[in-house]
Image (cartoon, rainbow, N blue to C red; front, side):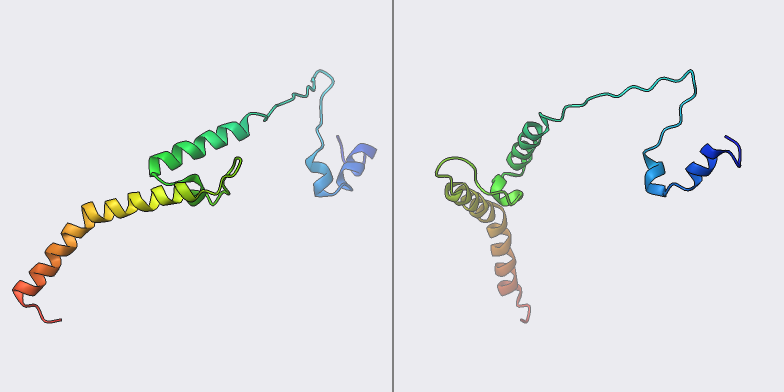
Length: 112
């Protein structure tokens, strides 16, 4: 394409948006289109969400903010189980540490 040709002038007058979708092919080039299917992505995403929620030990409704799915699903039992798990973790891991800190504080006599 040389400056001053009709094709060159027409291409220069196209907007950036119009040029974005334009392809220039030589006489020996081929152009082919392909179809892609993204039909299974939703299933993969849902499986991924379940895996992550299980690894985090959190309900999907809490972790991703997704409404419970299914017939008569409220998510209440999931949340109750989650809160019980959190409470057990607090009692198992944090309560002894807090008790030790408080007893050390009382026996050492550190001012409040």
